[in-house]
Length: 97
Image (cartoon, rainbow, N blue to C red; front, top):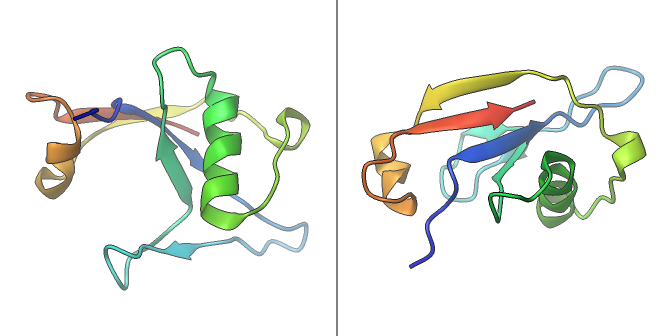
């Protein structure tokens, strides 16, 4: 089994008018979120993770020029129900915004 890397991105897609895209999770109906996703490899650039996740989850095409790194990260505890996706003992994720 390939474990998820506990480092991810959160991508906020918005319009000049202030509308924000939220996506309902297929595996958790009623739970809405922005585009998120984990690095596929430890050396995958964060902008590439963001670009790939936007394409996978929305079909939209983002470029490095259209992505803004907020230079902000949050560390949070991974919900117990999702921990099986990570290597044994991994309980925290760093999410870049």
